[in-house]
Image (cartoon, rainbow, N blue to C red; front, side):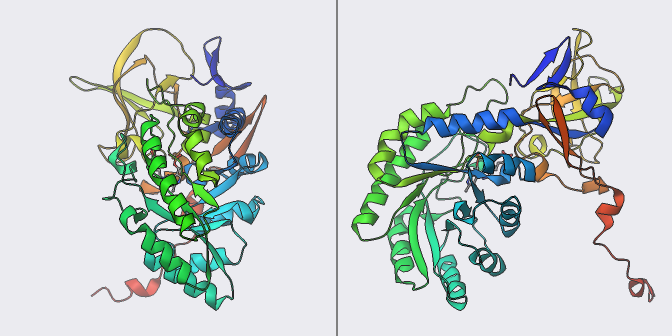
Length: 423
Ligand code: LLP
């Protein structure tokens, strides 16, 4: 268990703050993050690769709360952005554009134009047509766009199929057999400047083997491309390192550094890493309150006030999250389904889960919810998005307030004319 979420006298604390005290102030449900966990994860990652010329670029899609991004940026991290909106967030907290990577398989012309206003580290291009589009827009703006090309190394990864990206059947990157042509095209386009080679093979990867396989292929390719005269300054390894959700014991950054460090050094490139989940996943919990308990013939249900709209990972990937009682009252346990209030059978956080007996009003903590939690939330069922809280030692801050019904309706307009002619 993350030492920054631990029990004292049977009450769960985040760092020095009692979870129940936070909920008494902000209400339930709420996301609660531990600053120290983020700082330690970043330092661990960065230190593991100290012998390699590198830059860690936090993949902000995992958790784009401005304060989370700010903490990582102040530690020196670059930022991997997957949309214009994410670039906007990065700039908002003062990230140096020179440390911003713009990735994504479907960048719109508007997003490309937006990013070109700033002197960013690079566009990660994923198709020949995208290369042409970036070139055309850069030309109109009188700019030279720095591009890296994402090549799909075609390695298989043991993870959920929705989050594996490195196989040629996935939509990502340029097929490795076509990589040379893509670099030749980029080289021929006058408004592009090739700066590197990129990959990303998937997410929640627990072993180093797929990274070894992909790196071996990609470093050879980097050397070949450089020999052919292309400017390969960066090799971007992407993200994907796993965290423990259940009983997994995933490889650590140190394990990865030991496994691929020598190969990376042969490439003679500056190495970019894009960890997302590893830096923030275990730094967050989702606290939710038991609204009702009920029993069907064979099942116990705990109906809680958070739903799949707040944390969709169990519904979408059947992802496992540990669930703990915020106040451990007794040791007697039951087997129950822990479900939300949304009108879908898929709205569950756990099925047939052993949990300490609880009753109405008890608080539960859904663990390891710092990555791909809040960022994937929605207003389904017109449910307001929940607050985010950052704990720093013995203090806590509301970094995003709970939405109101008015917030949700803000962009909607009732147009009377639509109902004028109802015949
Ligand atoms: N770089 C690229 C190009 C990516 O597509 C991703 C994640 C990352 C870096 C960061 O990967 P990480 O280090 O976090 O594994 N919603 C899913 C995960 C989707 C990951 C998408 N890409 C989940 O909840 O498990």
